Image 1: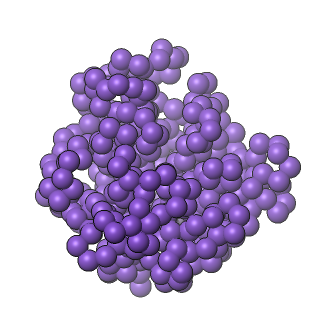
Image 2: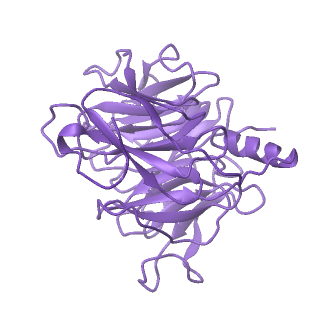
Length: 362
């Protein structure tokens, strides 16, 4: 039987339910116990348990989309970041593994509930009413290849300048286990989606997914969960073809720096890789100029979480202290003693942190 890393917590919740422990029991709030100098944080309340996936709106920096709900009953919640106002914008979809907003406003969703579709869904607002709740607005984007389903898969949209990946393509990171996980590229996801290369992977041979990012120079950063540890691999497509060849995958962070595996990562414009793992720790790694160099990182934040499932920031913005700006905000969420927390933490630099009525953690 396969075990998928993005579903381990969900599996634990299912087991707890079978033992008479309710997955809908009141969740503890996600809180900080340490935050690196120069940063500040606020809490964003969702009102329902966080489901593990986040997507930023590429055309509106005030909008964030989060999977939310109890086990097997996730829907997508829209968050107005200036006010903290939330609203549900999709019906219940099962267990959501990944979210990504396409350039035309469609929302790509990996739905990994074993008794429904196990595929990639496309949510399209057909009547322009600002949600995807109407009949026919959620359909399959494309059928799986190289696997029977997309259980546990994570999603990202490729920026311009990535060798071998057309701008706007949807990148899918699967969680097949063994040496069977892949990065798949779906070209033209808004119109006529096709795999590139056809019926094959951009990169394969790793264990479980640990997040996808892109450097400012156009290289793919691939997080890998290996259990009990993790690693980060830079994919340097030196010949610009449609797949990663021998010698083009280079480990830049080893298991020594990620002993608690890896759940997700994001990469800022100024070359910081921010990671969440199977603990309450958020780590940061500065990308080396030479992507064949192994780096060690430092702790950005410590939380009370049992498992931090997601890290998301706008990759076009900066996150290092003293940068040229504009600054990014890093959003993290996860589980506290296994009921998923109903809030997210938003971490940003103190120099640009706006005053709000939300709780501040410093």
